[in-house]
Length: 216
Image (cartoon, rainbow, N blue to C red; front, side):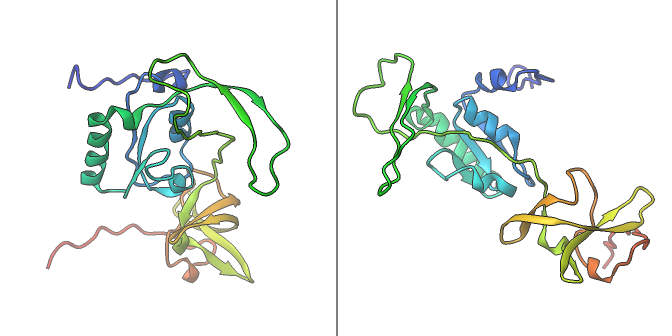
């Protein structure tokens, strides 16, 4: 694969690495609220990403990035090719906030913000542009809605312990998508849960993994 693929290994400063990219790509099938996409934005890189998890909350398609359906390799290829072949679509500028007027217009909800950009010959007065401000991010896990079990009017999930037994855990939910839901409290990323049909389970039940029968 050399010289086309470089495995850079651990990076103490991911923003410095991301700044070297021409195009930043995230092709995950499953995500929560990915730090990588936040870092791509902070580095001022054009982003192509799948719509997995909470990415749709961050990327406005064809405005601050390109969204493609998770698992659709052809659409991902086309989006990357589009940015490679059109320099203007991936041109971004990073600047420092010079002044912010704290009181906004109550009617239009507009605020005056001045940003200092580097001197570039192709950046001229009167040009239209969009500004992206990264104000924070969340690390809460996102799980399938089919994993939610309601007991006594409260929501929870069944955790899978190391011995394959299950234990019910109350949760607090956050944002919702058509088939997924954000968990604000009760479980953390990396814990195993029962993804569906948990309503029939009780604390202490064992989970048995069975291989699918491919015979017809």
